[in-house]
Amino acid sequence: MTQAEKDEERIREAVRRRYTELAKKGESDGTGKPSTMCNCGGLYTDSEMAFLPSEAASASAGCGNPGAIAGLEPGMTVVDLGSGGGIDAFLAARKVGPDGRVIGIDATPEMIFRARRTARESGFGNVEFRLGEIEHIPVESGTVDVVISNCVINLAPDKGRVFREAFRILRPGGRLAVSDIVLMKPLPESIRGDMSAWSGCVSGAMPEADYLAEMERAGFEGTEVVERTVYTHELMESYLSCDCCAGGDVGSADLSGIIASAKVVALKPRDPDA
Image (cartoon, helix red, strand yellow):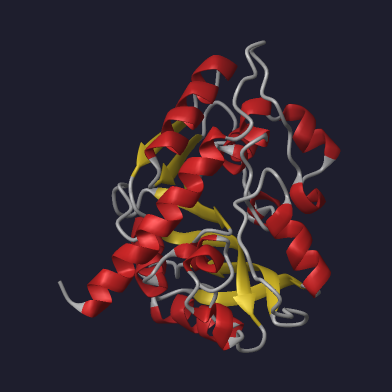
């Protein structure tokens, strides 16, 4: 195994460990209800939170609400990359309706088990969850209308591969809509290689311009940042310390103005012969 392969496996193991822990948070307290609900940073509207199964809302680790920018319509097929407990998949299912379909992809078995259980117990017949890495999406090529993702692509060691896979599964004219952490300035050296900070969506983030360039190299067009929130150090600490979120430790490093939550959309070109 090369050093690069060893480094990649270290990253994957740190992420799996962090999200296995998250999957166990907010589990039922014996009364049939989860012990906590979460809406870190007020990412979702009150009506969205009221609709969500509480088991999904208690395992949220996102930095945005990609469904709000995805242009979802009834009958669409949607794939949620890094679906976790299912919060964005269930919200998407509401928008695409019974004639639509949502497929959640996650690499953590505990998350998949939890999301499948929630879907079954809450009667979501148009949602399914598949175990797999987002660099190797277990979905057929050209079968999806919209790909969404919420603060997950930054966790991947090979982000370019993720975008190429998203491009592959989309139909011509399909849309990619993601919320993710990006860098506005270089990270302090002290946390750049910290696995805790990586799994907490910090040290794995890449510069915004590079993030968009990777999308375009994958073949996407019309790439646009539709909203951006630049984090103060206090906001970043609040996000990482939220009981429901993935967590992470940035120590004493000042991250003011360095990290941003960006909502990004892009399109797969239509077939000119269609």
